[in-house]
Image 1 (tube, rainbow, N blue to C red):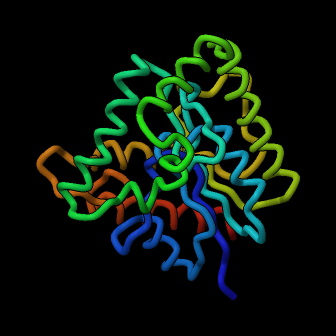
Image 2: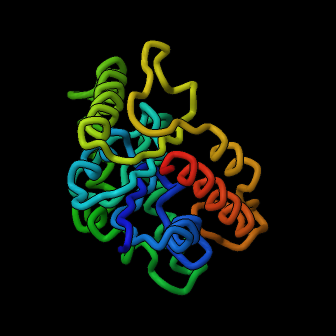
Length: 228
């Protein structure tokens, strides 16, 4: 029987390919991948997509950061830190840069919902600036992050779903403890040690081929330990 797994979170788990740790791990356990992360995927998106995934056997969650804003109806989210206009410009400029460098329109294929929704840079900047002016408060944003974190944990526990929580301790409140699954900090260390440099060819999830293999191997160790 083929196992059903889902990856949830940001760009560290957003890309599938033969050299991606998503595919390598799925092949190791004979699993079908039902969901992947997205660029700058927010904690709210993790909760949203987790609840929509049917027939899930294993959830692998790269927990997000409080500054990431959920963009419903899009296939990426947005980091509210820094200067919004400059950050937005960088996103839209990267569409053309990556198209020229790779020879194919990656963003049209992988961020079609985002492009269809906002159409162009001007619309995107107007929407974000209106949000920041009329609907944003840093404490509210943090509360939404914490609320999603708690609900993710409660949902997984209630459904009795096998899960692996990949977290950075700095972004978890000291009063919170997972009641579901296995918590892991080692995978982020592997990723940090194997990030692509400016001179490296592009590889899935922004890490080297060796790094992808190491992450897959570590995931398999955790999975084997928690599924006994």
